[in-house]
Image (cartoon, rainbow, N blue to C red; front, side, top):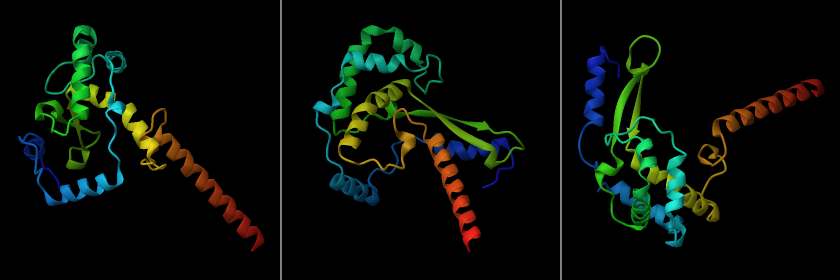
Length: 196
């Protein structure tokens, strides 16, 4: 899709990103996916989702203080400074992680903006970026260790998915692998040329 102006692009993205509601949650294919996942992936235990106040506090202190917030407009700096809420937040996160209920829509809400890339204005030169509520980013960061542990213990992560592994730069790893494959194929080609 090509846009003739900034206004046209803005209207297109607004219709997608600014509509209210959780989407079509009762789609048949969603149930099929849930069923397939439930057959393959064992449920994590409640013990694996234990979250102490210290762990939750440690996670939020590692985040950048002034990164762009979501619709809640609360930057990380304030979550870091209001220590008295950390215990309640940790307990709430643990309850959410253990619950089968859907989380409230406001919790996962984000604010999307179009960031123009260099060059002439076109639909291809627009990069949508979404700023999520800081509390939601904090929650998902707290889930990272127990989820990683669950994936590793049950052999659920493909080796090729290095981009999601801790202490691993998937892009750099993939570039190095590509480089080695290219070098090996060049050597093999040279060997075939010399012997054949």
